[in-house]
Length: 239
Image (cartoon, rainbow, N blue to C red):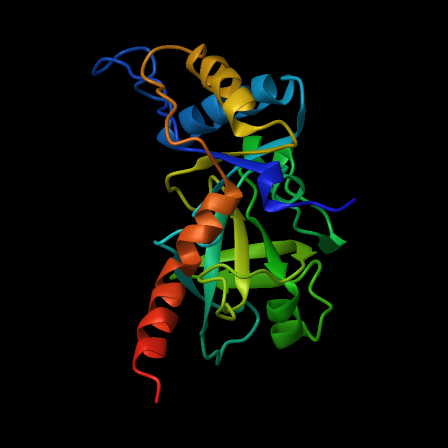
């Protein structure tokens, strides 16, 4: 099935529960609170008519701010770290973004609930460290984290559309805490599905405003604006 950028709708992040100091949610970790809200938002939006897939992830491909991460084989004592791009995602991210899994599996809800130390890498990283045979191996990232590789994804561009990206690491939400964005795959126009998503997410309770709903094509367009401007300027000085 052919997928276009118009099929993906991006919704800015929403807030987790708000409580008083020392209240009933004081002993619940922030990541657990966030995961509870995220899973419920995904479940409700998934039921909307016209929605094919929904998940959470961040930073999105082509977003202005990206996350880089040092990585190496966990069993390599004399490692020389490489630098890759990192995205924190929830189950269903690859289906929502149209990214194919070449081997292994997606993250599961049980991975999130059990807070398992798992990771999905792209084909470039798998080939670099394990000649492609990455499933079940352990990847070290950052200062101390060692994660089991459960999936291998097709390579994607993360930075700019016209630039080849470094290898990409996908970690579950609880491994790397950061702002998340709701991603909805649908063929319904944004003008129609947008208000439905907004109403559904905001029904989870106060303090969860939904804003900046836009198609993925708008993010891609913004990513190539600088390149287009440069080409126009250079053409003006051509001999």
